[in-house]
Image (cartoon, rainbow, N blue to C red; front, side, top):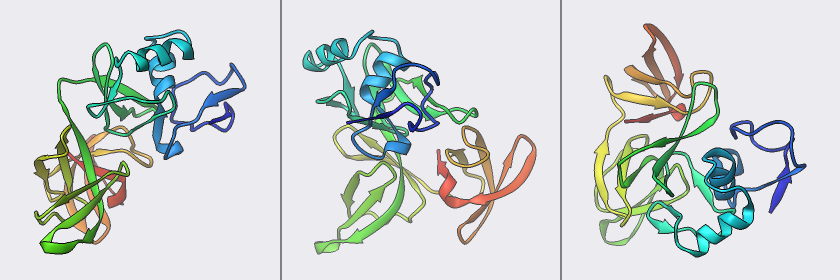
Length: 205
């Protein structure tokens, strides 16, 4: 479960030079950080993979409230990592992943699809590959804050005047305000400049 450093995602904040091979995230390679790289290379909480494995075996590392089980486990955008402190994976204007400290015990998710189930339930598909089953009616594109027990704590509509975080494209890593929405395009105001970007590049906060 490795890939060459040259082929690694450009979002990983790691040196261009070093060992030839790097750990590969267990899923969604382009949009996640392998646990070992997060702990050893980004947060500098361990020096070797062996030390990271010891931390895992001791139950010291959690992702979205669940104990990590493998050093290659994927941390997705806006997921919560618990180590020495609690962190949320975000992205900077430099287009590099970043772990910001947080006190929150819930993850932010964007609704990207849905499947109708029995008894009026709907399974909503979220940007990080997870799903949630509920009878609530939630438009695709809106955001959910979900606690570590899988319960929806709040629903944030993607609408005019919403504050959004841009996680893809030219303006990734910046916050903006929605001025209007037209089909799958959103007009936003960022740094006093108005521009139009795809709805798929933002998540409502």
